Image (cartoon, rainbow, N blue to C red; front, side, top):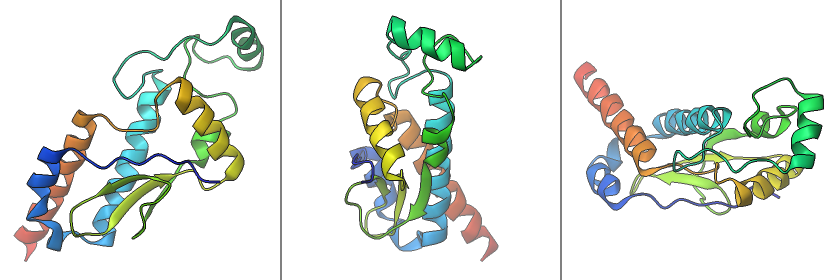
Length: 158
């Protein structure tokens, strides 16, 4: 079982990138996916959801359990052993089914996913309570800007 979340994109970003689709390759999409993965992990470590809000508090019972096992922050950050977030991975992939997917119209796809079934199940349960496995409009725009900057840099070299 892989984590089943799909993001179709923001219309304005897609319009911006649509004319550049023929310049986007698998290498660029891999870079994009890796950046998306880092964004999610950093925001999650801060205890924030996709909307920038602090995660809902842990139940009192789980908070005590976590406090006994882990000396990290008192706020929820979905980190206990590191296995779940450590299992998050990135790959370029032509198919978009069953993954958190970012696609530039007419190009390859960047995929952020949990390849391990147990970690994917944990991520799915956590995501239902604390929406972490997604990107905000601002984060998607940042990725679009990164694509444009990379394409511009490549074109300058040619």
